[in-house]
Image 1 (cartoon, rainbow, N blue to C red):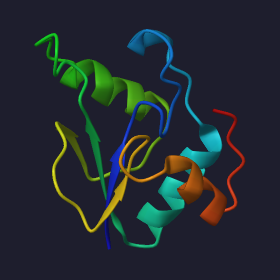
Image 2 (cartoon, helix red, strand yellow):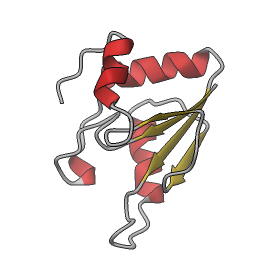
Image 3 (cartoon, rainbow, N blue to C red):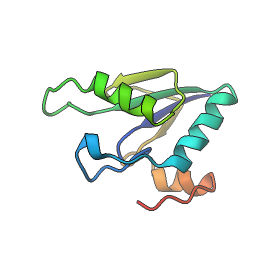
Amino acid sequence: MIYGIDIDGTICTTNCEYKDAKPYNEVIKKINLLYDEGHKIIFFTSRGYKSGIDWYDFTKKQIDTWGVKYHELKMGKPQFDLFIDDKAVSNTQWYRDNNLEIDI
């Protein structure tokens, strides 16, 4: 299965500057398990969409530092088999379905 996963508000805090975002470690552990099970993990973000700033290098370094396993990082909102996002499909429902306790 291909998983498309948003970053801000889904795998990390979103109510701060990007540099101050804190990872949701339990979510990252679950995503890493999905990766290890052979699922394709593609992260996407709209960072820079409004400002025009290129956040790719910063974001890649950030999620690498958090120890997230993934296949691709895309800037923008492409199509996937399963779309997990804090706005489109409830990230909190996905957390509950996967027994993840995240305080958002």
